[in-house]
Image 1 (cartoon, rainbow, N blue to C red):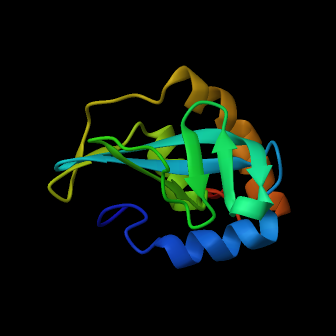
Image 2 (image 1 turned 180 degrees about the vertical axis):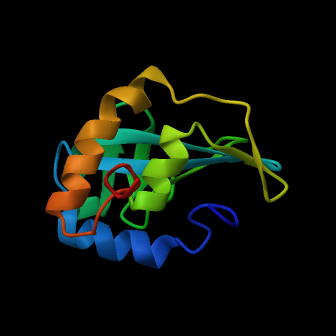
Length: 135
């Protein structure tokens, strides 16, 4: 993987993907940013609030339909479309600092549990082959 994973994913891309695919139980990617450190994780949509254009995940809180966290925190958390690049970053336990990979973290237990489901959903939603199937 070259460059920082998912750098091109912004609110408009997340909103478009969610508008087509959002449902309870769908796996979503997450990007945690704190200063120069960025981490990638997975979670499930737990509740949808269409009247407020927002959703909540099982472990990481509420987000707008554009993938922006609704909580105030020093750590910025945003939703990501769970592309092959996101799944690979989660699988590898990727953390990035100052635009370079840092081999600091391994995937969390939740991430390990959700990876097979995320890969299956990825294939069903016609996003193409995942890194696991390609490798």
